[in-house]
Length: 140
Figure 1 (cartoon, rainbow, N blue to C red):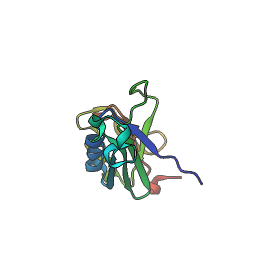
Figure 2 (figure 1 turned 90 degrees about the vertical axis):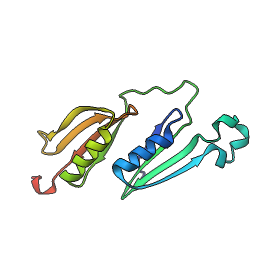
Figure 3 (figure 1 turned 135 degrees about the vertical axis):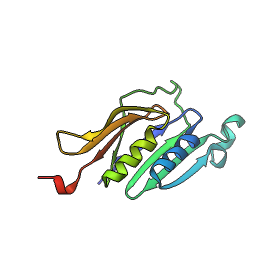
Figure 4 (figure 1 turned 135 degrees about the horizontal axis):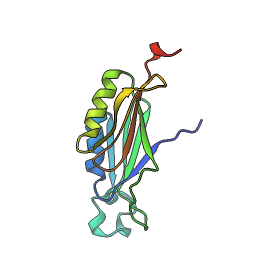
């Protein structure tokens, strides 16, 4: 079956943002700079340290990112959210506090009408996160 992964685009601060996400969520983080890629000679020298591709992965999820902004520029909006499905109440609290650091807590964590612990936030890079924990013991 095909898998859907989130791919974030940054304007020069991909390394900083992905390192922040690793500090918040854990996982293995890898970077490939433009200077390390086959397209290095085709790009301006100023871009050699920019991130061509970053991968943060942990236990079944992958977050991808790049500094490669399309010609129309970077437009941060609310059309895409990153859904983080947590394994425990402790994990959701930990991730919510870390990801919201420097950002905005738009919906505090609370028990929802559908029986899950849920909240959302906008991180300091302008990305919207939805955090969810469904206690398997509470399901009907």
